[in-house]
Image 1 (cartoon, rainbow, N blue to C red):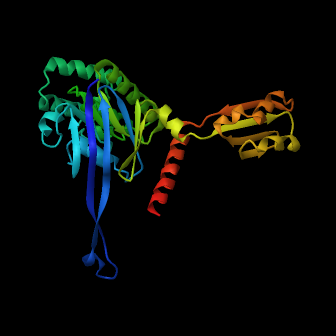
Image 2: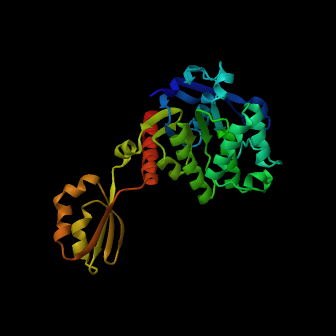
Amino acid sequence: MENIIEVKDVKKRFKTYESGSGALGFFRRKNSWKNALNGVSFEVKKGEIIALLGRNGSGKSTLIKIISGILYPDSGTVRIFGLDPWKERIKVVKDIGVVFGSTHPQVFWDLPPIDTFKYIRDLYEINDKDYNKRLDELVKMLDLKEVYKRQTRQLSLGERMKCEIVAAILQMPKLVIMDEPTVGVDLPSRISITKAILNLRKKLGITFVMTTHVVDDIINSDRIIILDHGIKLFDGTQEQLKNKFDKIAILELYFTENMPALKKNYLKLGKVIESKEGYIKIEVKPDTIKSSAFMKIFNDKSIRDYRLSEPGLSSILEMAYKGIDKKFKKNKQ
């Protein structure tokens, strides 16, 4: 399968300024260099949905801007459809759609979205037959009937973001880059956006790369890439992320009555998170289920029920970030 994106050892740094001390501190500014990206490499194949994760300042937005040709790297190479997005930007942008969230809209604020769609039709020289067909399909897919004919300023955030996606898709790009498209969006709109992304990938083979903090977006992605301090720390599937960072499971025991003496038999299984009358919740290692102590549960008549569950994706990501912080602090020492 062909690579839509190829990023190899990309580095980018910016000069930052800090005011000096005293009344004239502004005139005694100190400057330093910050590494936004420090040797990032990865590939994206046609039709993949990539979730690009990382906290603020991790390098996500810088990477997105380099991929889309807005910025150029200090070193390393980037190829989009085999082309350099900076040197051959006109060729590249014809096949790229972008959604930069609610802070950088492309749908005109004082006009109805339909006027923006017509502008895009003329800009990309889309013939009327194709334009009308695409618009009808996208409006139906994103549940925008009548909405796109109202003034943009009158629309809800969810409605505006769905119109932004229509604007990004109208020219039928090979690649769509989305910077936090569902942050603050209501649940029905978020569901519509997710379904649209999956349908467009299935029907047209469009590749999606999105930065996000929304767990639902991550769940529907094929791969997860995590950046922190400008370094790629993880690149793989949700299952691989789970295997790398998921080191615990949650065991809940329900007793027929409050029996403190019997509870003590199970406390050694792991760390007690919660304990109350007739109930304990314990954080255990996944391989605990193979232990003889765990097997006693099935023969203990004082236990009326039990539940063993794995952490959700949000908990796994929290563990991943904690592991990243520990590693980063250790390397700084």
